[in-house]
Length: 161
Image (cartoon, rainbow, N blue to C red; front, side, top):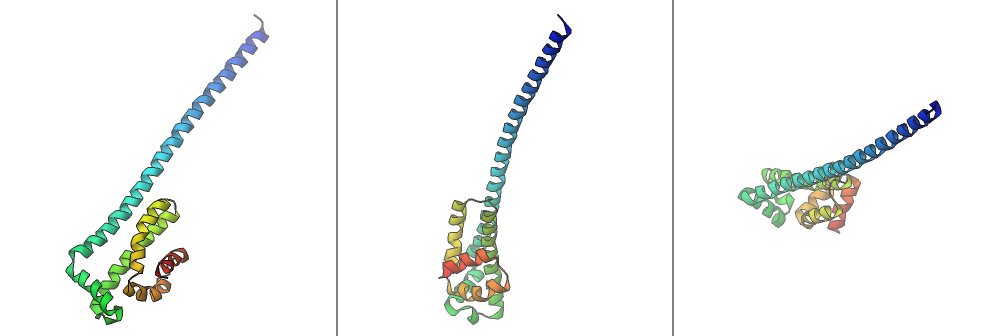
């Protein structure tokens, strides 16, 4: 065997090593991509669950507090101008928290953490809230004062119209 043959064998061996390394690298990338996809889904599920948990806690406040329930009922019957100062403060704190919950859902949807289907399902509650006269009176001024994002304002305004 001469030196040229030994050199050729070395080149072939080196090329096979490079090919094996590339195959291994491709398998690792594929595994990493799958892991990234699973992690992304986990973060999305967690974000949606936290949103639902927060919203549920607000609903539980309403369900377990007769004072809060009465204040919301009075706001619908009399309008928010018909509430006493303390009642209005309670009403506005609850409504602002409720709207912030929907705003969080809007942001999560805009950033791709919740799907269009999840946002559509979640926003039905916002649509129901927007039908209430007391909310509409509040929203008319607060949407500008609180500087909600234009896309969110358009959604709420669309529900009111």
